[in-house]
Image (tube, rainbow, N blue to C red; front, side):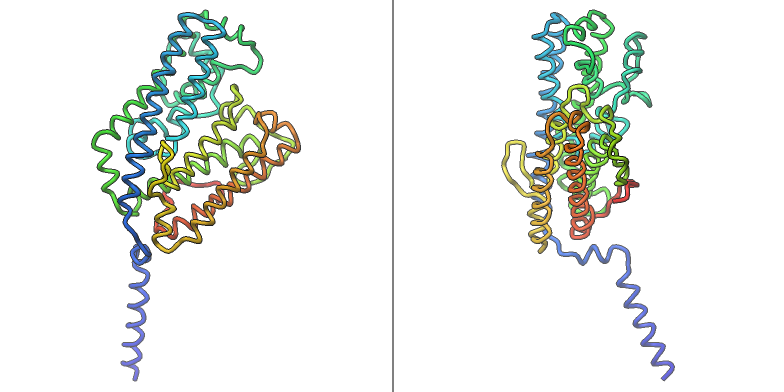
Length: 371
């Protein structure tokens, strides 16, 4: 009897061990063909998105050349319009922080071209010195889109006074150099996507760390957290989901602070994330996306919950009046901003916990904000 008990014991132990084998849980999850989704992302969202950004940057370069040649209110306004168009277009690709964008350091936080708030003091010092290295360890703090936001707008100067500052040829050179720095990184990223990485991305059909599906999901969720933590949280004094004193706000730490286009950029960023989830192309065509994949693996209820929460988030964002800086200073509008933040937390939970569990993807980026 003792021998029989031992056999039963070890049989049960073996069964338990096999059930705990790393990766077995993922392997047993319902699965569907991810190929069409990845092809749609590559061909209809990512590559066209970078191409559109490249076109916008080229237009921005020409607008800067025109402004430097003839500094008038009219050419300043045209330059600003080109900047806003390019900045918004940037939001549509900023979540694809993997592969080429990582290689050329176009997007990485602290290294890419959208580190905010920018360092105005360092910008002025570099202009005066006439020498700077945008690729240095601190380069992102005085370059990229936030630097252009600082150069082309002001909270204290009139347009005429801003134009006068550009009588300094060093300032004009700095403006052109900042845009060229962005252009170089965008062009290199697009070239890699149009080259071998295109096939690398579409042929990597797994869900393990580093796979295409994992990269898309990780960066989509991470971009949501960037919206929550830095575009909204820090300005409204919510750090790591801890509600700080509601009377203390930090408008100067918001994205696009000087141009007061924070909400415009926020809307574009959220739309890019939503379109990626839905598989909606740059032309507005709805193709295979993560929503379709969830439905294919029997997770229609989760898909419906995520889509519903996107609507809630968009509605909450629409309740925040322009401009973001002014809303931060108004107690009632500030409450709306905090409500928006809370709904972002709920959306992130659905995607970061429920969706990743359903698909079998692991969150692989460092996260210390308490979500």
